[in-house]
Length: 315
Figure 1 (spheres, rainbow, N blue to C red):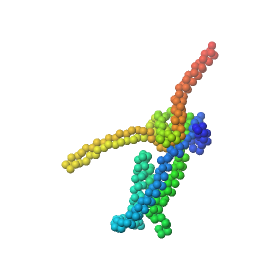
Figure 2 (tube, one colour):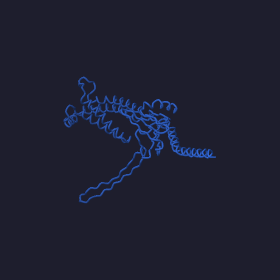
Figure 3 (cartoon, rainbow, N blue to C red):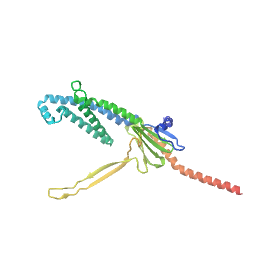
Figure 4 (cartoon, rainbow, N blue to C red):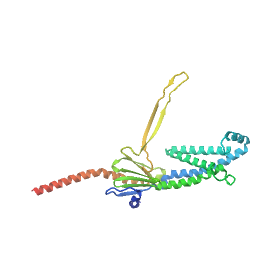
């Protein structure tokens, strides 16, 4: 498998836009395993599930408001200040936004990233604009106007799946006899390279699916600490005056633990056969460390040979 990757790597170097150094050869060319991006695929599928949930919420909300005329009148009075939208649609819109924001926060905590919250807000904003500024008159549409934004969620999910797959295919990782080169081509292009003699540590991570399907993430940590993140916990007691005028003094503290963490294009993210890839990197590290010693020995032997030939000529 790695031999096929080597052949592919030799073909793709020019297309990736980085040049080989003198006497540099590619050992392996890798791409992320499809299952390594499964959390992004699941996030897109989650939008389809949300569309189903929102549909039932709207039906239930409609039943409640039709059965409770007093409640409907109260809500119409309470939310009637918004022009161009009735109370039922406004309540549904609030529920729509609340679920999206909470989903973004929860996924962001699980991913340790703020990107899911941003994406969820953008999707909710797009759905809201579609509902409020839809050019199709209400009497023509079969679907209630409040549910138009819900109907677009599966479309957003499909677009997300396509973009995720394009993003995954834009990652390429090259192991040469001198360095590791990671390339990401998606809208823009980003390249990271690290020489083997600059690697201080190597972190290999395999989750449950990674162990089943034989893929994992390898993070080469540089001597400067590039490739490390921090998990921090904070404890703090604030200071404030009480009823008697006394001031309560607060104390704060922070404890952090550095752990390997890097973006998908700054690590070998979800690569197949991580153990073999790790072995290639370690072997190249050993060769890099041994090379100066071998060159020194070769130089000494050359000097001794030169001195021996010189003494023979003198004799």
